Image 1 (cartoon, rainbow, N blue to C red):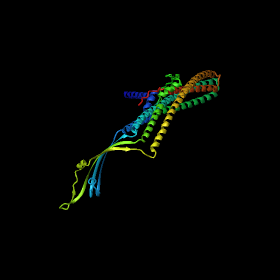
Image 2 (cartoon, helix red, strand yellow):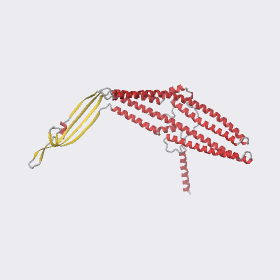
Image 3 (cartoon, rainbow, N blue to C red):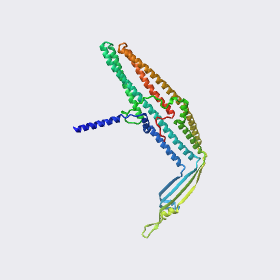
Image 4 (cartoon, one colour):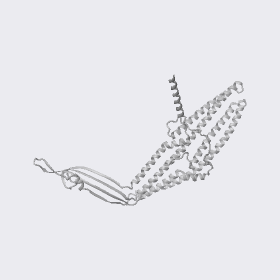
Length: 459
């Protein structure tokens, strides 16, 4: 008996821990931080940043000399020229050669220097690109988070409506029995309850899909038990609506990543033009090489007394390597004269890219100004709409309360009362929709004003 009690206690504790694990809810800040660490798009951008760092190491390597070693061994059989003695004989010769060569660019039209500077700018551009993706992901997470809150609140309203209608049905059955209202009103009410249940199913599906969307942004595999904190406060904590649009725009010009990225891309385009122009200039390269060789030949010299062939002995291998060594060094000058217009066309092509980068920077600035003013107008409109929806809801609630009193005493039929109830439900939905729309618009304005949802650590 005691054993069974212990088992029951263990099962109870296990279920308790399981329920605690399933009731873990996420705050907006937790969602954003988790997405910044696990989102696939961000991880890909981080890899692009690593590639840019590798490109920088390649560019630095162009300053350094190249060193290459070589070795070869060959067999010459039959009538051939001994590469060491330069005598044509019938023989089998083994020939070995080893060497090492080095070269370094002394002058290359400043192409190496400009390539290295461009590589450093490319790292900065990759950092800005990563930061922009992180900011976009943060904003997308905030939007998905608020959508979950909106659908949760909508589902709560739908369930409350069903509960009210079920109580009405019970009350109406009593009134039909008492002869206060006709029996036909019950059929309308039952149809209304069926519609309520259908609306609940739709809201539950919307909530599940919204959770799935956020779970995918966070790269979560399990989303069935995923839930977020019910934060329904509508406040402008940073008092962003008190700012003027021009002030938000001026702040955005200093902080927005897309402008910094466009400016860096413009500087990269300028370096590309300088690199292309460097091909017009002559290049000077210093070279040095060291090599040595040795051979081993079977040269028939005659026969001995027993009739066996005899061969001329070759010098020892290591002696040959020592005697045949040599050095070579010098300068290589290359002057471009005509290359089928390839250099000129490359310069012109990069000039076109430079002009496109200038236009892109100008366009980004215009887009930012338009987006800031649009975001401010949208936020202001969302606030006005939310306030109007709240006033409408209060009026609809009073109208519903009055209609309910009339319906309860038989002074209003079921059809008219249902219409009043529908108007109240629509007003409640409008308040929910406009509230979260306003909250998201505030987040966008804070985004442009340089106030992140959570601080982003720059690489």
